[in-house]
Image 1 (cartoon, helix red, strand yellow):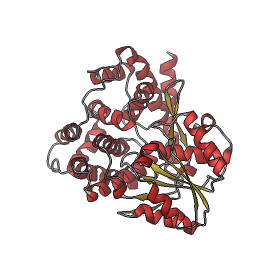
Image 2 (spheres, rainbow, N blue to C red):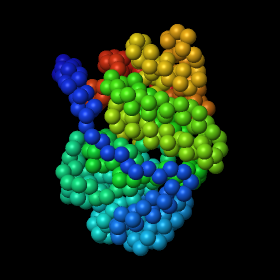
Image 3 (cartoon, one colour):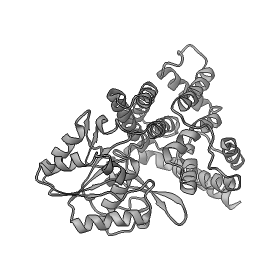
Image 4 (cartoon, rainbow, N blue to C red):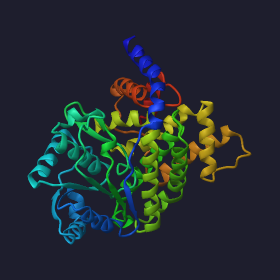
Amino acid sequence: MLFRLRLLAYRLFKPFLWPVSRVFAIPRPTLFVGPGAARRLCSSIGQFGFKRVMIVTDAVLVKLGLVAPLCRALEAEGIDVAVHDGITPDPTYPVLQAGHRAVQAHRSDAILAVGGGSAIDAAKVIAAMTVTGKSPEQLIGMLKVSRPMLPLFAIPTTAGTGSEVTVAAVVTDPVEHAKSAVIDPKLVPLAAALDPELMRGMPKPITAATGMDALTHAVEAYLNRWPHAETAQHCVAAVRMIFGNLRRAYDDGDDLAAREAMALAAFYAGLAFTKAYVGYVHAFSHKIGGMYGVPHGLANAITLPYVLDFLIDDSRVRDRLAELAIAIGAGTADEPPATLAQRFVDRVRELNRAVGIPEKMTALKPADVPGIARAAMIEAARDYPVPKAMALAESEALLRRMQP
């Protein structure tokens, strides 16, 4: 009974947040795009006048040689550069504390995040910790960054999370194995570089998972109940670009045009869900990722078609999915919306198969289904303007369909 009352309270309160989402000012980073964009961004950091820059990244990118040219570009601007490569996937509190200590020891006056969503999210939280003196736990939630951020720049090396443009950073509690978000407009970087040259060596599984992550962001934002004219445009553009370029980037990692298109698609999807939010796919994947260590993009990719199966009976969702089907060339406006909507869901499954995404969530244990279902429903009811409410029994049934 208490669980149902909690969900009801969240759902009743949610409509009052819609006007806030429409007027809340969210900054956007200056964007450098194309081959060589990363080096141009480094030159611009020198023009800002910063003298001590910490690169926050992971050890793999350092070993691959992607970080060294950026160090040289910054040093050419007279900047004292240090590298902290201790970021791991789904950064935990201790990982963030270590990064914070490194920034303090270096006395950095700016941070350059290099890597995927985990590295950029970690850099956001580390920058916030540095200026506020707060721990990661104290920053979780809305608007907890009480002072201007340590200046932050971002160079994503994957095309998926859109973290280079979003107001959020996801962190992991290593004890509870739960993911939470730090949310504040101050987290948006000052500038970002979308450089396909840094993405050309991305392994196929990461190309696939991050690309489907971006698709999830765009689709959920497009279906949600907080529509914005601008975000709808970004969603459609992102969906069209992903269907047109993800297979190309997956099949040929040296296809720089496809890599650049995927990076822009992830950026557009990030712009969209920053305003329109995500939904049940993320609610489920956050819990699954936190519990089993499944990478976020992979969890989203597997979960997306199952959630679309649940939502498709809603008339508004059906019409929106039909619009997306037309946008990707999967049908024409003279066909029935129900036919077009189902075709779009089928195309999502086809794209998953084409890029090697498994159909089932092998990590999911039957005994964990009730707990994951309840936690996901609370997250969705509390945080997301989902287009159709899900009952607990429906949530559990969806998870069981995802099991092998």
